[in-house]
Length: 198
Image (cartoon, rainbow, N blue to C red; front, top):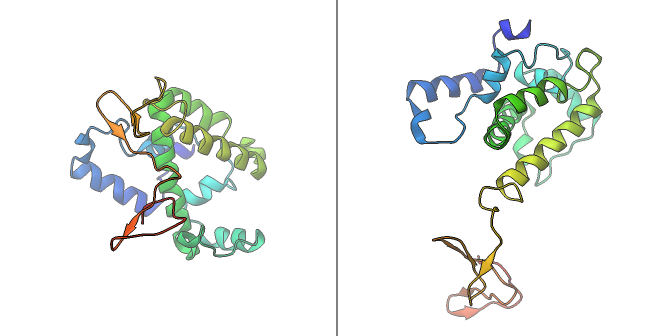
């Protein structure tokens, strides 16, 4: 059983220990850091194939990711610059997944997310299918976006109301919206065509 073996991503474990030793869970966060570790201990990853993308990331299998990047022709672009060094990709991936799973647990509850991880994210379990995994990963990103920013966001439970300046009005907060008429001032001069502040 995988849950009886150590979680090997060293940086993640170091962060988890630091958070626990500093008692940083008392920061009133809705879902504390360590969701992936808890899922690991609860056996959600027990039936996963050793070839599974996430298991490779948990195990910091840098050689696999070097081949993966080469086989999939992943070049360094502005969007992928954080993965320039393949050696840090497994840790970046695990930390990004931790953030995503914290948002999902916050929105759907731990038991529902554990079932999702065990049954759907496993992508065929021992008959692992990488395409199924990436489909499930896409679902995670969409759900996280909707949970944090969209229709499932805790702030989206009421219709938007606007004040006379076009700002969204919430109970006691006003959130500014940048309009197409906005022209930022640079050294006292207007800059034309700019729609966002610099």
